[in-house]
Length: 72
Image (tube, rainbow, N blue to C red; front, side, top):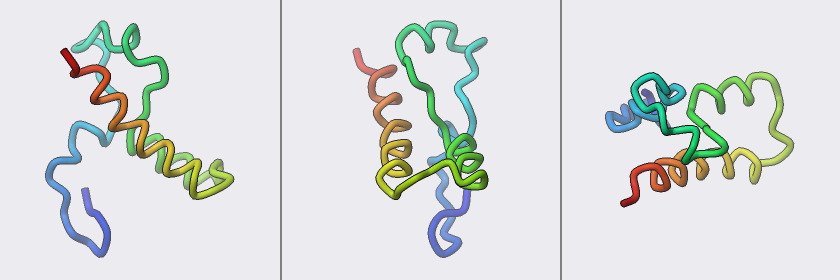
Protein backbone atom coordinates (compact mmCIF):
# COMPACT_ATOMS: atom_id res chain seq x y z
CA UNK A 1 0.00 0.00 0.00
CA UNK A 2 1.25 3.47 -0.79
CA UNK A 3 0.92 5.95 2.03
CA UNK A 4 1.32 9.69 2.13
CA UNK A 5 3.68 11.01 -0.54
CA UNK A 6 4.16 7.53 -2.02
CA UNK A 7 5.88 6.05 1.04
CA UNK A 8 5.19 2.33 1.09
CA UNK A 9 3.45 1.03 4.20
CA UNK A 10 4.40 -2.63 4.51
CA UNK A 11 2.32 -3.42 7.59
CA UNK A 12 -1.02 -2.34 6.13
CA UNK A 13 -1.67 -5.66 4.35
CA UNK A 14 -4.10 -7.20 6.84
CA UNK A 15 -6.22 -4.04 6.79
CA UNK A 16 -6.49 -3.50 3.03
CA UNK A 17 -9.51 -5.76 2.49
CA UNK A 18 -12.28 -7.26 4.58
CA UNK A 19 -11.41 -9.99 7.06
CA UNK A 20 -11.84 -13.45 5.54
CA UNK A 21 -14.55 -14.95 7.72
CA UNK A 22 -13.87 -18.42 6.33
CA UNK A 23 -10.44 -18.22 7.99
CA UNK A 24 -11.76 -16.39 11.06
CA UNK A 25 -15.34 -17.64 11.46
CA UNK A 26 -15.81 -16.00 14.87
CA UNK A 27 -14.82 -12.55 13.63
CA UNK A 28 -18.35 -11.24 13.15
CA UNK A 29 -19.41 -12.47 16.58
CA UNK A 30 -16.70 -10.32 18.14
CA UNK A 31 -16.61 -7.35 15.75
CA UNK A 32 -20.02 -5.80 15.09
CA UNK A 33 -18.92 -3.18 12.53
CA UNK A 34 -16.12 -4.44 10.25
CA UNK A 35 -14.02 -1.84 8.45
CA UNK A 36 -11.06 -1.98 6.04
CA UNK A 37 -9.19 0.40 3.76
CA UNK A 38 -10.97 -0.89 0.63
CA UNK A 39 -14.31 0.03 2.18
CA UNK A 40 -12.94 3.45 3.14
CA UNK A 41 -11.70 3.95 -0.42
CA UNK A 42 -15.13 3.07 -1.84
CA UNK A 43 -16.78 5.50 0.57
CA UNK A 44 -14.32 8.25 -0.43
CA UNK A 45 -14.90 7.67 -4.14
CA UNK A 46 -18.67 7.79 -3.71
CA UNK A 47 -18.60 10.92 -1.51
CA UNK A 48 -20.17 9.11 1.43
CA UNK A 49 -18.16 10.98 4.06
CA UNK A 50 -19.82 14.14 5.30
CA UNK A 51 -16.81 15.27 7.28
CA UNK A 52 -13.19 14.56 8.08
CA UNK A 53 -14.38 13.30 11.46
CA UNK A 54 -16.45 10.56 9.78
CA UNK A 55 -13.42 9.49 7.73
CA UNK A 56 -11.22 9.57 10.83
CA UNK A 57 -13.75 7.47 12.76
CA UNK A 58 -13.62 4.75 10.10
CA UNK A 59 -9.80 4.68 10.14
CA UNK A 60 -9.90 4.46 13.93
CA UNK A 61 -12.50 1.68 13.67
CA UNK A 62 -10.06 -0.49 11.70
CA UNK A 63 -7.56 -0.47 14.53
CA UNK A 64 -10.19 -0.62 17.25
CA UNK A 65 -11.61 -3.76 15.63
CA UNK A 66 -8.11 -5.24 15.39
CA UNK A 67 -7.51 -4.63 19.07
CA UNK A 68 -10.94 -5.98 20.02
CA UNK A 69 -10.54 -9.19 18.01
CA UNK A 70 -6.95 -9.86 19.07
CA UNK A 71 -7.29 -9.04 22.76
CA UNK A 72 -7.00 -11.88 25.23
